[in-house]
Amino acid sequence: MKVDLLGCGPVPGAGEPSPRPGCQCVSCLGTSLIPRRPAAALVSGRLLLDAVNAPPPTRPSPTPRAMATRAGSELDVPMPGDRYDVAGLMVEAHPAGDVDGSPTQDTVVLVVMDEAGRRLLWAPATGPLPTATLDALAGRHLDAVAVDALGPRTHDPADSSGRASSSTNGTDPLLAVGHQIARLRSVGAVDHRTDLVAVGLGHGLPPLASLSTALAPWGMGIVPDGTVLDLSAPRLPRPTLPRRTLVLGPAGSGKSVHAEHLLAAEPSVQYLATGPALDAGDAEWTAKVEAHRARRPAWWRTVETTDLPRALTGSTGAVLIDSLSTWLTSVLDSCGAWEDAEGWRDRMANEVDAVVRAVRKTTATVVAVSDEVGWSVVPESPSGRLFREALGSLNQRLAAESERVLLVVAGRVVDLSRGFS
Image (cartoon, rainbow, N blue to C red; front, side, top):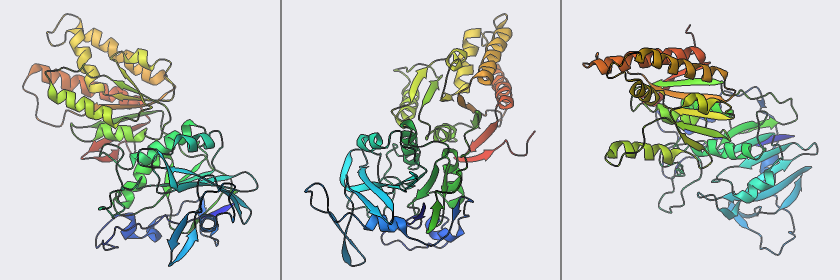
């Protein structure tokens, strides 16, 4: 089956010039500048367009046929429950989701299937897929998925820009895309063989280079308008996340947000929160913890612990440790480091060794977050210097165990794994 991917390209905002001079978004750069992946090729055909525009002549239910206006004429559009044939392709229409995940009655996602059973999910302009649609897709392997990179659109009539409506607490509209993939993986519809393509590209997204980098951890790519996916071609497994990733950065750099982004498309994530318990008298710490909690998807399991070796033993799926810095603080507390208690260095070394062994042995995919605190002036206090040296040593130990080490500064990411020994 060869399916033409339309709607990959510009979604300019109402009244906004496109292209904007100097703008680096996909819409303004033009999709012709997007490098084509080897799995995609430009060929003739408009099968997907035909599928969208050709609902069945009759429906089994008495539901009135939906109508849409396109190019000055009224066209029939699919409705949930429709099944119809277009040029030998079986098309199913399932409910799309509103911004809160409730089913919509006037918007659908399409499953296009050929005679060999290969399936494409066409899911632009949808919020979180409703439970009924996920149930219908459960266990039905999808060979390709086209998801809107801008996420669900706002329904505010005053906002006609087509920008992303953030369902992720104002942090990163792209996370809605990752979470969509995670939910499809959780029901067995998507795996490492599925071709994941971002569509609906335009203003409101990061610059082209940043967008490609942001989608890569989820196995998702971007292609020009008119690209045709040949689902009959041999499927190459998508790259998976490294077993162990260490994310470093100074305070306020965005390292925790990036670590969460890396795992956004994983169907099962255990979040190991190592910080101190909430203190009613510390409003700043409470606000920070609550902000972290609000960003996490509902299906992530949070474990508040400083016993990292025990938490990592037997873990499966993906694990996010946030953070090694707060974990080390608790270790130094318990070892009596601040009072220079006898034998505290040996006790700390044993704790660090245990964590390094656990990270090395676990079969889970681990993303660990830690601070870089050695770039400022030398701390005045002995305790500050002690912490700086101990954390620097811990970071080096974990970096040596990690296939990938990332540095986050001002929300931008540098891969330290490339070209370093």
